[in-house]
Image (tube, rainbow, N blue to C red):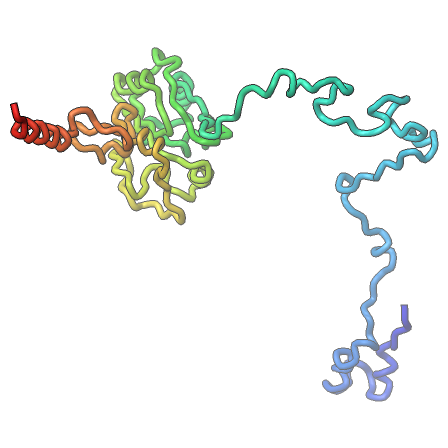
Length: 296
C-alpha cells in the first residue's frame, strides 16, 4: 500500500487542522491521490461465497486416493465405460421402434382441468374457509387452498353431492351435468366461463377480474357492484371455435349463452335444424318452375 501523507504535515504551515482556512481544508478533495482509502487487507482475503453456492469439481482419473481414480467411477469395462449408449440401442439388434412401430400420439388439443368435487367444497364451507354468501371463483378456491397448481382451469364434479347443504354460487371453467343439477337443487347457481392459463395466474394474484370480461353479462347473486375493483389487466374471452361453442351452450351454463337467439344452437359450424328456411324456399321455387316447364 503506498504511503500516505499525514494531515499534521499539511497543517504545519497553517497551524492546526481545525484552524486551517476553508481552501486548505479542501485539499483532500482536490488531491485524492494523497489520501487513498484505508482498508484492511484481511477483509479482501476473507471474501467467499455461500457454502452451498459452490460445488467443487470432481477430478476424475487422478489417483486412487480421490475415490474417482483408475476407472473414474465407470466400473470395469463394458459399453457404458467406453462411451455413451444411444437411447433404444439393443446391441445391434433391430430397434423396437422399427420392429413394432411407434404407437400413440400426444393430443395437442387436450386441456388439463383441475378436478373439484362438491364434497370438498362443502367441507371447506363447513370449516369456514369459504364464504357461501359471496360468489366462489378460482381466486377464492386458490386462496383457501381448496385447489392448487391450476393449469388450464377447474372442472366441478358431483362426487359427494349428497353432502351438499349450502346454496353455493360458483363460477368455474367447466362443470358436469350432475354437479350443475345438484347445486341448482340446493338453491345455488353455476356459471362456466373461459380462463386462459396466463389469466388464471393473474386472477389468483389479484391483477384480473375473476368474473367479468368484455363479452360477459354474468348476473351472479350477492355480487358486489361491478366496477369497484381496479384491475390493470382485463379478463380475456375465448377465440377458438370449440371454446366459444362450449361457453355458448346453455346446458353448460356458459357465460356467452346470452348471445344465442331463440331456437339457435351453440354451434358455429352446423346450422340449427329448422333454421334453413331460405334454402327450403329456394327448393320449392325451383320445383315449381321445373313443373311449369314440363312438356307432358
